[in-house]
Image (cartoon, rainbow, N blue to C red; front, side, top):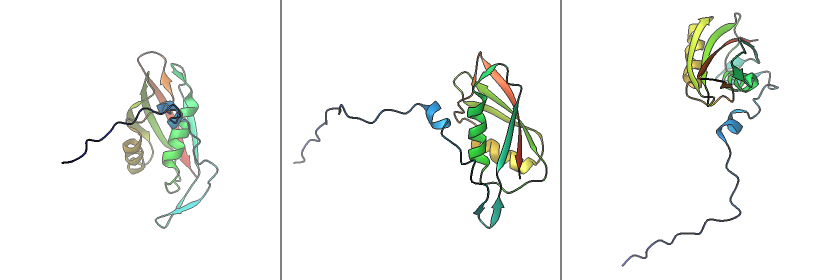
Length: 134
């Protein structure tokens, strides 16, 4: 006969639970200028955010994009994206406005559904991002 598993009482010293926004706002590896990844020289991302009205904390989105794009290869032309966020800070949609379509598709796949730390003040908000990898 097998013994019944026992339940442990919740510990009063449990680690504090981290909010999704806290995870999204962690520092991106922005100081890491060049790294080797699969034999390709990766470059430091430079990000500018346009159309900031209607959102809170545009820096959260910038840091998330920098973290996601930090392993990408250098590009001679900037990538322009239109990103839609909701009131919880989740990225709902990523559209390429200009630049490399393959890079835009890779970034869109990594960004969609992620918490960005940038929240729409009401409903949903659209932000335009220019990403340069030099």
